[in-house]
Length: 279
Image 1: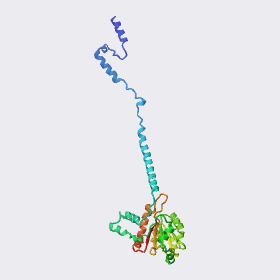
Image 2 (image 1 turned 45 degrees about the horizontal axis):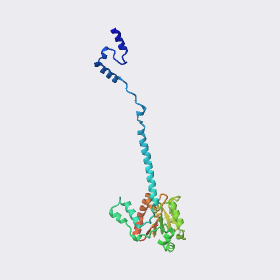
Image 3 (image 1 turned 135 degrees about the horizontal axis):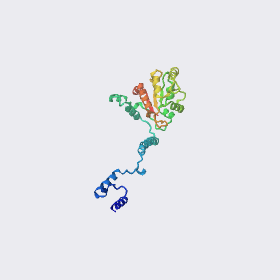
């Protein structure tokens, strides 16, 4: 009878209970539960709990696009400022300041002072109300008499310096009312070789030259242009190109202008034989 009850008891036990009788005692039950907890497999992480790894790769791309947008906004802002800024007529002080800033890193204080030009060598600047012809008539009222008495070759009496060949052609067309029958020479590099200009200056008497500082420098170096007879030098100072830059705002042009000034022009100004104008 005891054996039958024993068998019935084992059959009625829940799964996972130890197979030995001692497992039913209170002392062994705790160890069995601990064993079950240690050996039980961990539940697999759900898809919801997994963190997307791609989110960290998106950051640099967004920052790069933002930086590009920021640069574009800055460029537009600068253009807007230049477009809204009112043009101001050039003054002799503007030229003096540009010269001082350009040479300040390579010249001593004494050398910088030697570059200063007296106010007497400057002509009246354009107040932005003049055309080129009307401005030239104002600064040189006796032009007809002056050019008729000029007979020296390889020289000009009036020299206009601008930033490009296209601008030089515009200026030549716009000064018809002033020049009259005087002879004009184109002094720029586009489609014209320097040797052709040297030969032209050697053969003909010309009175007025319009060109770029780079080509004028080259003609002086090769002996094709003599500055001593020069009476007036006018800078195309206030005109702006499509990027709203004036002639002296372009680093390459500014450098060539200052190099040209040192090739005898500054000394002629100090001797009072040459006058400078800012159109």
